[in-house]
Image (cartoon, rainbow, N blue to C red; front, side, top):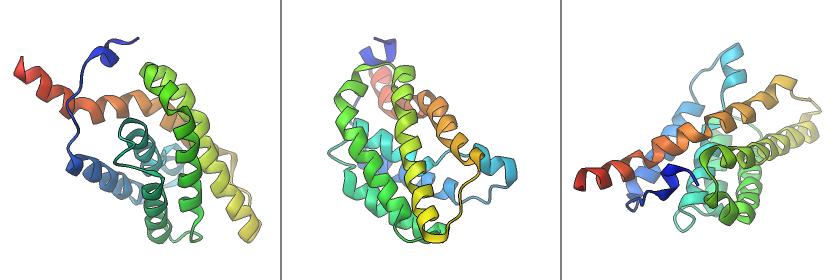
Length: 169
């Protein structure tokens, strides 16, 4: 086990969970251009996945549906495509959650990649059925970037919990 998993974390503050999800939504809506769009992971999906994995009593599959609808509205995409993708991704992650929490961050990233890829596949399948357009192959690089960034996200999101514990010692 990695050293970070041996550290006991303080309970997360509910406002921090919601703040991080709203920040992810805001970052997703930034006007990325050309190569930036290709390299941008779906921050909402990564954050939903993290919070569903580490705080399943706070972030359930229903919140995936809600944030998916918010992404559909904000992104002016086909209504329900993000919602469906996030719900399926969170359902699949709930099947792996007990196992994933035992792994180190890099091993978790190996499991995160197919989960993020499933989300992108569902969204591209919905688009294909709706308007017959196939996504470019670069569309599928975003899940890889999200999986590579997973340890950074975990460290960043656990930092407030760890920092408070270390200051008490």
